[in-house]
Image 1 (spheres, rainbow, N blue to C red):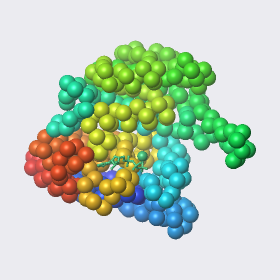
Image 2 (image 1 turned 135 degrees about the horizontal axis):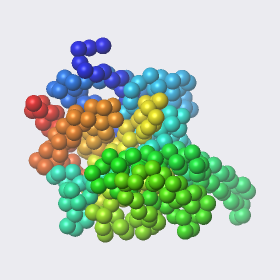
Image 3 (image 1 turned 120 degrees about the horizontal axis):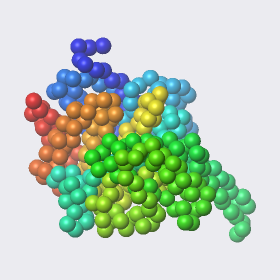
Image 4 (image 1 turned 135 degrees about the vertical axis):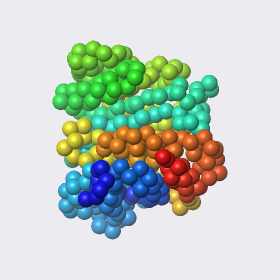
Length: 360
Ligand code: ATP
Ligand code: MG
C-alpha cells in the first residue's frame, strides 16, 4: 500500500530478557534502512508473548496466536527464557511452538568474522572463517519423543528417542545442497555420528549420498561430529557449508559463534523453504538475564538477523548494505563489552543508523 517497490508485514516477538532491547535496536535500524533506501517498506506488528504472559495465563501463545503469525511475511524473534521457568518449558512453549507448526524445518546459521572483530583463534582473520551451518529443525534428537518411568526410584529410567524420517532427512539434505550450491566454493560437509548411532545416523548418511547425485557440482565430504569440532578449531578454512542434525548442529553452531568472536553477533533463520508459512529470524543468543536492563547487550546479532530476514524476503541489496554498515561500525571500534569495547546497545545502534543515513 505505497509507492515503494515492496511492502512487508513483520511480526515481532521480543519476549524475554535482552530480547526487547535488541529487537528495539533491530527495528530502529531496519526502519532507518527502509527510509534511506526507499526501495521497500516494513510494517511491524508486536506480540508481547513472553515468560511474563506464561506466568499470568499458563501459556506463551494465546489461542489463535499461530493463525495471527501466519498472516505476516516474516517473524522477528528476540529471546525466550526466564530464571523461574524451566528452560524446556519456555523453549517448547514459545520457540518450538512456532517453528514446528509453521514447518520451519531448516535452521540456517551463517558464521564469519566480521570486519573489526576478532576470533579467539590465532592467525584467523576476516575471510578465514566463512561458514553456513544448516541445522535440521523439525525432528531428530529434539522430536520430544520418549518418557520416564519409576520416577524417583533408584531404577528410574528416561528415554529420549531421536526421530529421523526419510522425508525429514531428504528435505534438509536437499536444502543444504542448494545452500552450498549458491555459495562460491560449493562445498558441503555432512556431519553425523553413524559409527555409534546405527539407525537414524546411518539413514542420514545414506540419504546424503543419494541427494548428492542431484548436485554433481557440489563437492561433499563426510565427518563424524566429534572430529568436526576439532576441524572447526584447527582447519577453519577447509569448511564452507555444514549440514547436521538438530542436536549436533545446535552444539556446532555455539562453537562456531564463539570462534567467530561472540555469541553476541550470531544470527539464525528458521526457514520454511516451501514458503508456505512465514519464516522466523532471531539472534542465536538467549535472554541473558545477567546483562538484562544494563544497556550493554550487543545488538549486532539482531542486525545480522535483520539482514538475513531482508535477504529471505528478496531484498538482497538492502541486506548486503545493512551488513556493510554494521561492519563499518565494528571496524570503527564502536563495540559492546562482549567484543572488548565499552559501547552500549544504544551507541552501537546510533552508529549503525548514522552509517545507514550516509548510504547513497
Ligand atoms: P537462555 O537461557 O535464554 O539461553 P542464557 O543466559 O543461558 O539464556 P545466553 O543468553 O545465550 O544464555 O548467554 C550466554 C552468555 O552470553 C551470557 O553470559 C550473556 O551475558 C552473554 N550474551 C548473550 N547474548 C549477548 C549479547 N547480545 N550481548 C552481550 N552478551 C551476550
Ligand atoms: Mg542458553
